[in-house]
Image (cartoon, rainbow, N blue to C red; front, side):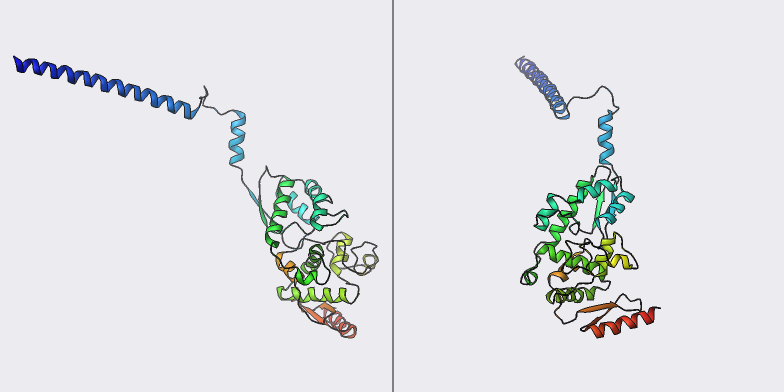
Length: 293
């Protein structure tokens, strides 16, 4: 008897413990469901996304376009590339790079100044949400990053500002095809400035004409544009294009030599012949004309 009573008591206790365990499990399940609901937030009655949600999903999945700006382009050239390859209108890009406070701040001048020269040539990812302002700011940021730490001491000693160095760099970019000639041509420009000579850079005449022309006309040479370095002494008012970092480095620290002239060789190599005197230069010009006729 005693053993049977003991067995009954043990059975009742075990049953009570089982009921208690079940109760705790139910409570834990309810609590877990509540936490899950709180973390997930309220559910919509329909599984179909709203128009706003679908737009967000579409924007996240936007396909980007790689837009590449080669070295030596004007603002107008870049605007054409942007309009051809993206949904950004050329007019918006030109407006975002037009003369204004940012240009004056970069050039450190009070004169109306565009962003010409500071629109760093590189490849940028663009999608339909990218605005002209977005793209331009990224180009300006890239210019700042790539030119950070550049040594302007050589130019500063010759009373040239970083903005004027950029103007020289743009001329070098447009005039030079062979990398090894960048510092030489930059040195020619420095020498002509030092001697008070006309720079006579064809690329600046083309810029004044508003297009990169294969041949310069007599009318182009008579242009009253301050960018016409065949007619006006000194540097042009600003860069004629956006140069790459190699040309900027060459313009900041040119090669020291006594060349004052250069003319393209007629062999199609893109190389130049360099001269120290007017007579030597005229001989080279005559040779070029004879061989390219």
